[in-house]
Length: 172
Length: 285
Image (cartoon, rainbow over all chains, first blue to last red; front, side, top):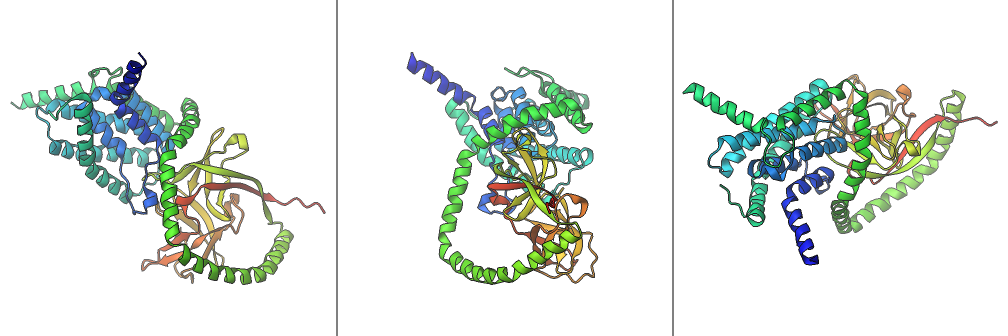
């Protein structure tokens, strides 16, 4: 009985890992600035939300994504609601891609991810600058976008492996 | 044919936004709309949003501190190892600097006392009051904001606008106060503007953050004889900070006469912060 309940908790953890990782990445510092690599930063929640919304949307509840966005805003000191909005728009893009694609491929997903993050970051930038008069460094954001785009393919492969191991799914 | 592809597009969009997915409690469009409503209310400073923020902040800051513990441990270990490689080189450098500082300190002590006396005469002598030592809870480098969260708030008498010091150096000011936590906007943030005085010469200017590890001088006439390594202190204008808090030194002046400032404090290494306010010394005589 005890063994069964332990297995049950473990399997629940595995099944809910994407949302747990999302909350950890939002709450964690995850900045790598101590490595002293100039400009290096990437937006891990963007990668995670896009991938899981595309491949297994039920793993990330929209309500929980919304709450994760609120947490992110509070930690970063951004106007509340902006990250929730951007995360949910990413879900929208991923959902659209899922509906129009019959046969998925990593390359197509990757390119669509680029369009998604460009659109979402542009929206975020416009809202922050136009409505909240926040000064932002354009170069910082561009470099962040570039690394987010490049890192997608690495994390996508890791998540794909996780999908196969835990859910027994292949990339179809 | 054209109508068909448009229909497909509309169906895909409707399906992505309006349909509640498997195991989803809310539709995407509802939550996107809800986020926009929150953003709009935040824009017009709606009171309810402030309560929402206050409610989330305390819990989130503490959780973030706990969640960041493993990464902070790695970070500290990395720094320690790095420092160990340069111990001897640093020792030699520090030894020679110490000798110079000791001799300079002796001659400076006379000037400091004289300055205090003169400032008291013109009623401009401010002392540090309400000194609060705080620990950095979150130091998240974001492409949007350069700020840190500390573990002291209104419970500990932290107030908006108080100065944040790293030892004697100014690092920022308090821009958000919660019950048990506060946010410090660092000098390196793009939105930070501090009135400064450049020595020698006492030239008045504004230091603005750049989002990087350095700042820039603004609103300064080009013909002032400012050179590299000139020192930058707070000017005390605006009455926020007292005059003379060290900030940094002029790092470079480029061909467009843009002057960059190297801050004395390393903002990525802030573990403990002193929060201070300033007021005139009460004369008991």
